[in-house]
Length: 349
Ligand code: NAD
Ligand code: TYD
Image (cartoon, rainbow, N blue to C red; front, side, top):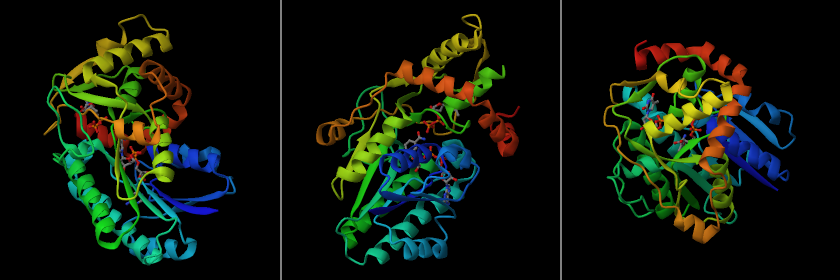
């Protein structure tokens, strides 16, 4: 019997991690702490509502009282920390919120775990979920490894880099049993439509322009969200304390090529003539400080823990598109919130 705190479980990746843990480990109790910001959505977890080993708590990770009370009540054996402000464009327009949640929130949790466990670290684990963006931007060659020097360049990545440093500081200073993973761009069901793929899917569906920053030649390494969740499961249980694991899809795409591929899948799924959706592609002003290329070397995770991505990209993309088409009610609920206001500010239409 273990009691595990998962933070940010109502978000995109968090909801897949919560689902995996609740279903795979009926002997664990999973407590999901989430503030339900614009990105948090309990509809992502509808199927788990009545599971006896699952509990949702609405609360903010920066709220010392809430966090300390939870640790005192549940005596967690482990923490899987995903709660964060996660969108680069929002970090450019509103950086302070990112520093508050991503840095202060992380140290609030670290400290609560340190106080609760009081040096009795046997069987305990604090797992911090981070991003490859902490390593900065690559040129046309090379891969991020676990020893690549940090070089964050957006308020988002700088806030995540700071939180990674804090997690390591708690390992070295207090011996807190921590583990960190840095993952590449995720895609899949339940991703909020501010990120490139779900935004484009929604726009294609509604015949709206697909906004491509700059020339569309920036490169990202895409991983299916359930493959990330499977890596998190492995690292939580088998990762080495104090270690970092990179997670990536071995799947680099130029943004524009990715969108051409998506347009083809959408045309096929919607029964539109080939070439219809790509007419919506519109080049817009580049993102400030836009990182050129991310690419991850996950050989440590593959070699040491036996992980590998399970899905071919085209298959994952088709599965994702099918999910969005079958779940338009989910999208409609999001669009009825603050989304239009954000969209207008970001894209000016
Ligand atoms: P998301 O934005 O979809 O979800 C974030 C969740 O955190 C939401 O449910 C939100 O309500 C919650 N949250 C935000 N602030 C909070 C606070 N102060 N207190 C409690 N809950 C709060 O994010 P995501 O894409 O699922 O990312 C999850 C984690 O994975 C983040 O730490 C992110 O940095 C990391 N990550 C994401 C990607 C990606 O491609 N999306 C890649 C690598 C790493
Ligand atoms: P995004 O999904 O925001 O993830 P990240 O910035 O964390 O990599 O963006 C993925 C890529 O797509 C990135 O190079 C920026 C680009 N992009 C666009 O071209 N247009 C858009 O509207 C968005 C949201 C992103």
